[in-house]
Amino acid sequence: MTAFKQPVSVLVVIHTPALQVLLLERAAHPGFWQSVTGSREGEESPAETARREVFEETGIDTRQHWLTDWSLTNTFEIFREWRHRYAPGTTHNVEHVFSLLVPTTLDIVAAPDEHRTCEWVDYRQAAERCFSWSNRDAILMLAGRLAASS
Image 1: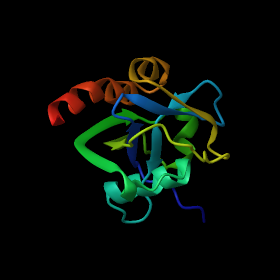
Image 2: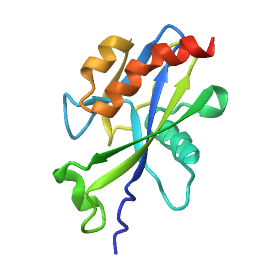
Image 3: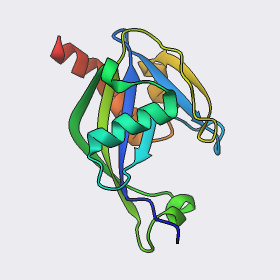
Image 4: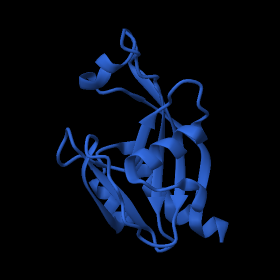
């Protein structure tokens, strides 16, 4: 029996101090750009899920950088085309938001089964390119969060 995906996920916005944001283009949906996302596996905490997903999708070891849990969640309707991955009747997902501050743009090893390519872009451009409203909003919040932590 195939295990269903859990309707609990993470969004991790990876960025530099200069607000260059890493965007990944989905392999199954050319033109759909996003930050790192992924569903919880087993009994992982959201932070454990964030660390695993960042490594799987980019090759970045979060232990070498500044991973921040925003203590922010978004609830959204799962696209109909992806609902078959979840238990019958599951229509919504709860997403936990994180950011990962890296010192400069890094070389990325994108997971070829998940992403076609990746780019580092200015946060405003990144927000415009994201297909997900929650991803767009998180990217737009980066400048304020960095200013508040300085």
